[in-house]
Length: 76
Image (cartoon, rainbow, N blue to C red):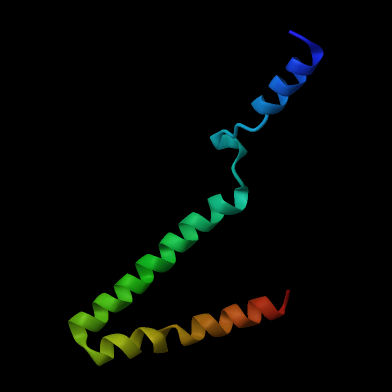
């Protein structure tokens, strides 16, 4: 085996990724996305069960929460 062969072999071994090498942002985004999907599904289920009040009452209830989020974002 020549020096060229060992150099090529070491480069090809570096391309393998393990589960520990994954991006941390992807690990954070998964639970957040799952939470959003579950909340939207619950909102849709409330609309199916109770009609129009099931659609607008959760939206009205989220107004103070969104106001707090906007204030939190604006403060930096």
